[in-house]
Image (cartoon, rainbow, N blue to C red; front, top):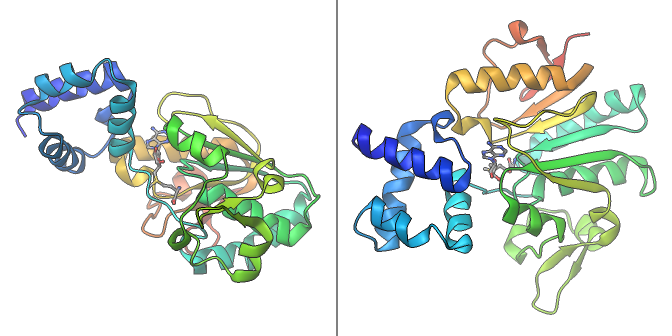
Length: 262
Ligand SMILES: C[S@@+](CC[C@H](N)C(=O)[O-])C[C@H]1O[C@@H](n2cnc3c(N)ncnc32)[C@H](O)[C@@H]1O
């Protein structure tokens, strides 16, 4: 893609969607943009933007597409098992009521997995603060409503948890029960521009920063370190590694887990 064309798209996306594409890896974004334009049927970007600029639905669709909201419950099962068996017991010993932040929570699979796990470990009535944020408001609305999630999306949830924490809708889909929905505070939040919460025990940010340029990633990890309390844990995605963890104030706490140094 020519630089001039990409600059035009970045300008329009910034203006219409309030998303700064400069922070995202260019080759990946450009590949996705090309596919999107092709599928849209418009001959070029100026015509495309003219057609969608007053159409909130089309704008929100483009934003969803660009920010990519694929997710699943207990994504990377073995990492969630490690979280349950090693990380959470340690955190709960220090703090019986945890402050958890799922940053880039998409359609809610991640914060619901965390809320269900905590409910199993500490009982249904222990109050933890679970904050779930994303830049994508339509994904947040969906998550806030507890779904519904299609049957294949809940396939890897153990059957005892599925029957305890979900109800089946008339259409055969699955909605998270209200008791669990109420445990999560869903909030719109842009990791690139909004202030971060503080004193977090467990910060889960998975498969979000992979789309960002290296300098943006480093800056975010620094902010994550500040958002955690000393001893707090950062849980990252399966393919994410903090190469400069020590310089950012972290030590390893297992594969995909980093502890803010005390
Ligand atoms: C691939 S999903 C990851 C969902 C979940 N964390 C997981 O691992 O399954 C990436 C999410 O990051 C969100 N995202 C992208 N850019 C963001 C930003 N600047 N601020 C907050 N969220 C962002 C997207 O809207 C999307 O929901």
